[in-house]
Amino acid sequence: MRIALPTSLAALSIAASLFATGCGKSPESVCKKLDEILKDDKEKSKDRDEAKAKKQMEECTKELTEIKTVSPKGYDCIVGCTEYKTAGAAMGCLAECQEKDDKLKEHRKKKREEEEKDRAKQIVEWTKAKDKTFDGTFKDYDDKKTSFSITLVEGFEDKSTGDSFKSYEIENKETFTSAHLNLMTYSKMDADKQEEGYKKGKKKVIKKEVKDEGWIFQLEDEGEFGGIEVDALIKVGDKFIKCDANIYNSSAKQFKDDLLPWLAKLCGSVKAK
Figure (cartoon, rainbow, N blue to C red):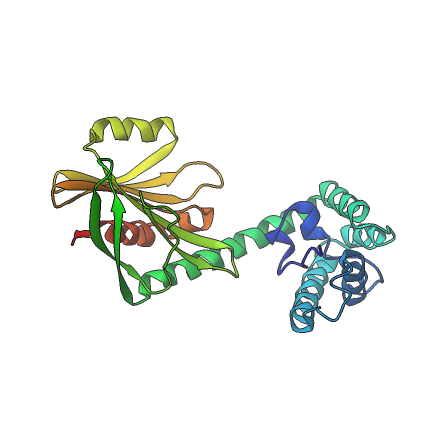
């Protein structure tokens, strides 16, 4: 299977990122050489998506042009990697090129930060979409049916696979980013104990709201690659529905002041039918 040339070297792992370099002295010829190395038999056939391949080549060439300016030494190292005949060997070479070149490391870091910011801005656009109401039914812990409605936004899809919970997702396929929301009936919980659990899991409570005998927590995962989350217990009729909504992507943290209240609003919109 072919490894796609990235939109930016910073978007993938070190090896995969730098693999968008190579062969001749010009960035374009380097990319063409590596494109050939990475193709499998299927990609060599008539099924190859030429439009996609052309876009990837343009992105690769642009990235290598930047690298050639940032670190001529690192670029020369990358060019040498195209002498390998197999993808695995070339990948290893490219990883080594970056590991021993501080300028390439810094370049990759800056590119990643730029992409993270752009990705976060696209996530915020979800909050501006039109409302869309979903109706659902699932079995609760007493094996009885509970009917409800929840107001999300256009773009969310029902991804439920069982009858004991409901799961919804909105996804940006270009940035591999998604927001998830899960619902299930729940027995009453002690909010203080819940809060203690967050601390053990290294989740920072940004806001705590008590609502109709239940509660809504807005959380931030303090891990390097963690995201943001809303954990809510909503009173619906004579039962409680547990709502977990999250964007498990570090990009989301940059706009948590916009996204956490939005996720809380989604969870808080659950109503009995």
